[in-house]
Length: 360
Ligand SMILES: NC(=O)c1ccc[n+]([C@@H]2O[C@H](COP(=O)([O-])OP(=O)(O)OC[C@H]3O[C@@H](n4cnc5c(N)ncnc54)[C@H](OP(=O)(O)O)[C@@H]3O)[C@@H](O)[C@H]2O)c1
Image (cartoon, rainbow, N blue to C red; front, side, top):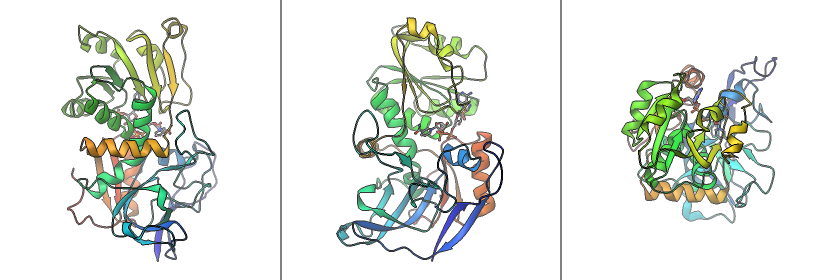
């Protein structure tokens, strides 16, 4: 058998409803042509999973397993798939429909996990997946750390490396809401490149931790004048931001327009604060560019994983819950997202990690 976690359909309007979780027993799947059977060992939550429970996300499936991030061990290979990968630890690509085009997806693009477009999701014991949709997990990572990487790593990679145009040593980069999974990946990538990274957070403790990870400075977005405080932190020989990597939205343009150099970039991958943000004439006058950025292509995913391996980056794990059937503690992970308590990724350990569990 293979257990799966799905959403249970109940009545309610988007934004008001909160779908319960449901544990199911399914037959163990069999790998078809070109496919692998993967025993999932760990899965990770993302902000989208919190949006799905409130029906604030498109194309929700109540049949398909939840979650987009997973790490597991290949148990079998179907016809025409490589048998040499059996026994290897892999991570799954978190999305479908985008091979390599730099500007955007070639086909209908969506994220795996409780999505009508695919029965693939990582909140289950076994998944069958095309061989092309896995990468070998970096060996130095715990299973929890490896499961923490795919979605946030890919999103941060595209927003920072592909879209900001400022993944260069010495550039001044602001990353907002540093407790978030994408923001922390962007911080790790930018520090590895040699940028001067500044961050915002609602929590002084999270600012401290970001500094320990290599950020040059940080301010609380709860302070009414945080942008002025940030100005004072910038180096005297480069007293401006080159780019902002933002997942919050809200009044970000009003905050950063004067901090950015003329022609500076705001690479925006999310709007946690609300589904709209203001665009300002003052930003137009400074030739600021606002660039929307989603997750990335299959090609970008491979590039991101290679970069992580090269720089021995360890994704930040906030908390691990043991057991796919540990419903009350899994609920606690969703609560962490709702309350913004996390610093990094929230993990469900499905199979105990023989390497000693998460490195926390
Ligand atoms: N376009 C895409 O393909 C894509 C992909 C991934 C994520 N996203 C979106 O990007 C956003 C972040 O995703 P995630 O998974 O990294 O989320 P997450 O782990 O839940 O983190 C969200 C973070 O938002 C920060 N935040 C809350 N209010 C803020 C404010 N007023 N100003 C600045 N930051 C604020 C908090 O930072 P502190 O804890 O430091 O206060 C919180 O940790 C979500 O909206 C998500 O839907 C989009």
